Image (tube, rainbow, N blue to C red):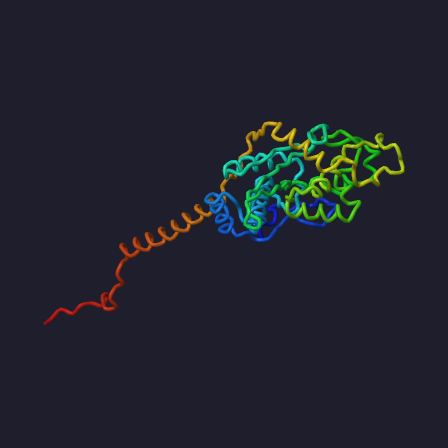
Length: 305
């Protein structure tokens, strides 16, 4: 499995609205390094290799934003979205893959809410060069805490960044089967393909999240609406306006920015060094080996008469 158990277990684990957990299947780093090498030589990633590459990318982001004493399997990733965005920005620029950095608050024309990254992956479909767009959100789970997704949040004190009394986006995903399926998949994978349907499914709950109870003309519909009238195309036009608007500030946080090829190269060097050290040690032991004493060496020699 990818993720280790936390060194210090929490007495009380955070309670989440959805049962899905972050992707925790083994990833062959040699395969991901081969995908990177192919991309550098050919300029695209094979369509069947995209999920493997994105699974590694999500894993690397979650490891970078999680406290070493904690585990991504149990973490809500609260407050880690900017750090994840900084990681994606740096590692993908290093690998020469284009990105767009976005704050969802800018899309919705409100206060900053959540940092995410869009990635444009060159690929081939039916032997034709094209691109596939994905939205990377490895810390989405922070909006799915049960405590923050109750209907009663409409009538409690404002909390968090939007400074409104509303349930978090998880509440609105949970109103429909489509929303539940989407949220569970996003918690697991940390990314989704940017189709029109997926974009609207993703952003509508955030739009409802920043809609206070006072904005509902029909009070009977409060907490029951799961979609907005905004179209996916309108969302996308706004994304293009606000993308890369804010400067990425890393601060003092140290990130592991090793690419898959660099990880494999380090592992190979380490293995070669272990082999080299083994033989050097064996050679020294042979050089300074003390010969075994003859069984008769300690016998008293008789003086000839």
